[in-house]
Length: 55
Image 1: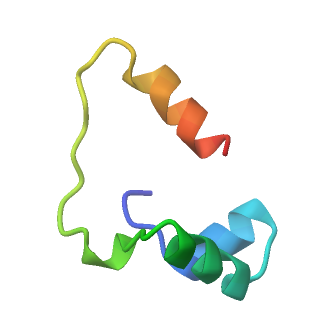
Image 2 (image 1 turned 30 degrees about the vertical axis):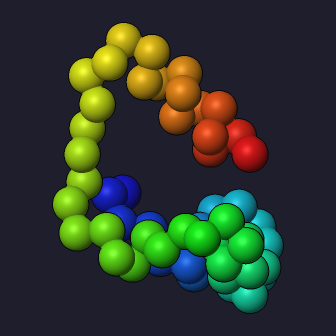
């Protein structure tokens, strides 16, 4: 999936939509403003993504 909605994140992670929205707000994340999906060709990108998603 290249576009994550708050509802989709909440469903996958197993938390409420309001919890996702609070986390995004606290961390100043605005995924709805992202217009493009960029794929990295950096050799360590997969492990970096795993670290971030694991949070």
